[in-house]
Length: 490
Picture 1 (cartoon, helix red, strand yellow):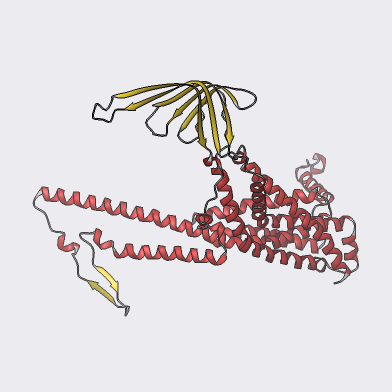
Picture 2: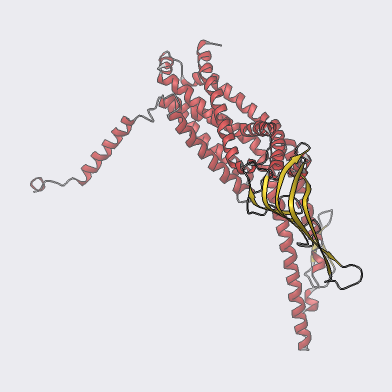
């Protein structure tokens, strides 16, 4: 490796690693803000948060690599241009394409790594991360009984506390409704005071009540009237109620329940899923066409093709045989009503089948979009490198100022085009290939244009160039609208 290659690679790898970590961290913070309310008050533990951070950090890598490549290439070649190293290299007769070659090979390697990561690691991380996130979201909030508010998170019970002392255990004015029998408020316990605590490693919640009364209504089931009840009142000086807290712990769901989603599959699995859905659609159409005759009482001549590709006309109830004048008005109305109901039934049948077919087509499009994203996200790294390296050579500004601004601009453009293309592709407005490859195609056009300008040493972002064009435009406008001298006209 020549010294110039070592210089360029060394200038690129450092910013690339740094920007990749920064971008992954930014996307991870976005994940935390998005699901922050699902984490509060559930006492999940550090191990759960560590797993979530690891899984979702891996999930964000494919979308982070294009932005990191763009930002790193802008910083690398911007720094080389700002310190006149790029100018010295060009002055020695080395073209810009030769300068870009080592980092171009590196960017190609990043694209290959992105495809491998998106195909192998991302499905595994998606399965682990989203299944764990589902369990976190369905976990109940830890026990938190507030004053004057009925607490109903304990299965089968409603608890109200009039006053809760600062120690968190001593209670004043406790009311407990027992709804375990689903028969209404037939079991009510009221106590003047009490204590609340847990035991056996937070497995059970204990209410130790003092100076209270328990009211119970028993329905008469010995043959009397249904509305006859037996009222029982029990007074106590001390009573203990124990509630299991097993429903508050986080329970892991079987991960196989999430494997159906396209995010959890690699390229071969997605290909099989797309083919399977298309076969189902074709089979449904074949069955539907074969069962059309049962919906018609009268039909036109049925023309089919046999195995030898010869046209065959099958016998049937011909329309012309039935088109005879009916002398009785009642038979005419009966025929009209029958025809109307038959047409309505056929319309409803085909509408239902059409909706089912649209749903299957949309599922196939979703799987195909995710399949092609394995390739488009990898190719986006290469396209972003073309844009970043060319722009860095032109603007000659390093650091985090101009490169960050340009990187965010092109990344937002890529993200908007990707969302638009995915939406139209899933809804069958565009072909799937057109929708998924549109962002890369548009950005590739920018990359080729900027590379052409960088090769020709174009001063694309120098303000004095545009000042010259602006002055020429002002001179042209003045010459067109300048008033002519009357003496010269005479």
